[in-house]
Length: 540
Image (tube, rainbow, N blue to C red; front, side):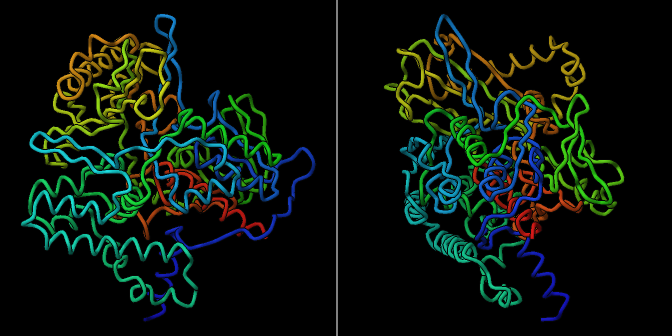
């Protein structure tokens, strides 16, 4: 192997963020009393995870958050109806909190014992027009394969080859997580042949090369919505690895909603003598001599530090918070070439009766058809007359989630931002009549679909209704287009090619779904840990 390829391998492995790493000893603070070593912009899961690691390592850490509560998308809110209070979970359906690396992060930060987990009885439930799949929790890849062979026995050979590849990828990734010695990085393709073979493949390419039946292609790609791209564009690695973990370890909801996780992480920062300051909008990153040296907040107050970690959106950082001269043109161009992910449309409903006996699932996917590419197209066009959606009934997981005798459900669909652009200027100006009418129209369409396919009579049970759009997402997170997964996980920006946590500005790092490794609860938290690693490596 020549030197050029050797160096390329080094960069790609570094970019994955998968190699094992630990901070073996406390870091020595450099800030004086009342000053800060590191400032974290934003208290989403990435920012809170990074902030907690930093504070626990001994650095004087300040986390700044524009909202009145920590968490970003990992939060919840309440709505009143008829003297009853309903809780509305913003983002969490399920996450593999018991997966070893996820659990280890929570243990490291002294958060694990503070969470109450509610296990899902199914990995997922899928209702297609012509068939259905109910996959048990903890089915693993073996159980999933057996179920699909039972669905299409004529495709057993192709499925065997596909699942052999999937198992190989999962095993190699688990080995890579333990750390790849520097001396072996040059022979990565020989050590990890499966990972190497799929590094530049989409999910659709892998599936289509192994199976032909439309039902199998749908079943093997159905949860694309949790990753934000259709199979033809979605990185195979970023879909297969977390999906394997989910099948192996099972999905968990959190009692107390995802806000319980965000609050516990914020407490971990504070208990380590860090600070989480809410209702504080960062307006600029201060850069001197090519080095990030602090931030300016609304009102003009400046906070100085020796490093800045950004949990806010990467496009907002590059084109809003940073001075135009702070980043080299080639670095800025790399950010600009990347595509923000889709947004979401969510309807929360408080019902006047207990439906847990009538609706058999905690959550279920309802698909308009078996063509996931068409699914994506309809979602981006906000075509909710033929939408696919996820319906979640929280009281099936957490008894007592709702007021006595009531139920709470949510209906979630991905959607594109383009549809909402015509409302954006008026929305920001507070003129929301047209926007509100369109939001209500689309909410009615989703409710009607849920009523037709899942809960007969649903529309007559509703006593509380709320909805959120991509513009809602932007309002609370400042993510452009209401993006919920950071940058899209394309082959050109995933795994070995993912945007790293370094920004090209000395002392400025990304800790969010926008950087490495990407979106989802685990992805955001790993992004926070990766940013901490960057700070710790540079601190010495």
